[in-house]
Length: 85
Image (cartoon, rainbow, N blue to C red; front, side, top):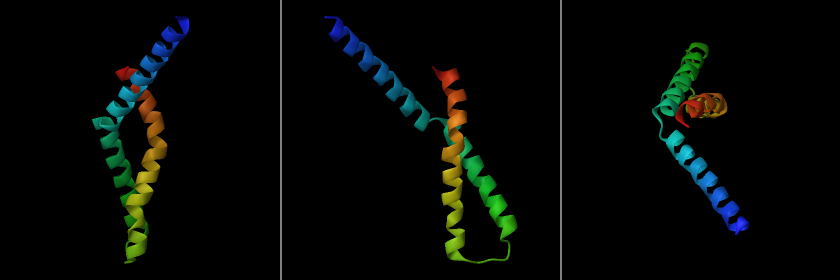
């Protein structure tokens, strides 16, 4: 009986984590920070390569913005989770 209660508690914890993950993925906070970070990368890129017209180089801008946003959003997510748990 204790084992069953322990399993139920583990399932509840997992479900709570999954719900929080879903809430984060659709949160306006996440979307805004991704947009801001991508915008900053584009500004930096544009100022550095103002006269270069290279399609392959230009295609890296959203990729770099996305990578930076995923790396930096962990800290933002922790703050967000504290307010949404």
